[in-house]
Length: 253
Image (cartoon, rainbow, N blue to C red):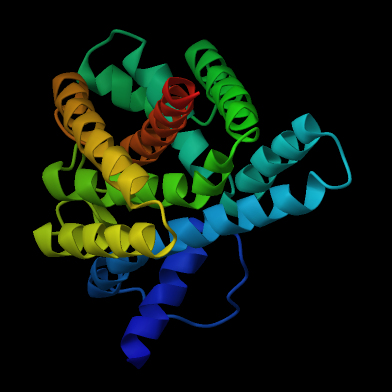
């Protein structure tokens, strides 16, 4: 039990900027076992975001409450997934060979495609959350974060490392089908408990499709997956989840 607790803290420290202030074991097995907690941490991040929105919408305009919610997400995660999304946009839209793409993705300087990608990312989130804010679907924010983290585990399982070394290799080809199933079952259980089981199933199925397609794209571009690709996939699933929920809201209105 203590091992699971420490591995949970390790993942909390990795996926957020919450100061754990505890010396934690960082072996590969710890990351593999900690992968089982991805959807739980995603749900907690989303729940914190939703709680902030509920508090702020009572005292400021809803548009500013949504904006604050997005800023909170960036701060609490250290923008790690958005950073990977930006790097992937720079690399993949350069239309170069594998080595050049990898070089671009490792470059700490932000390029044109990263700027455009991140701007569109934040704009879609803002507009999407604003649409959801007018209904009870805003309560699905924790589900969105949960499913996006599930997709990271799925890509880590089906993807192959594009390079020999890298932070992403702590999960890529280390995570197995077992961790994928554990995360899926936890996500479905949480979705059922909070009363959004149908939305959870729809978003999970869409996440599987998006992840499979993105894995194919990564293989065609760089013959594998990197840590940046994991972050990019997280963002893609988040964006499509928001769009899907907004579309469902429109169909039901």
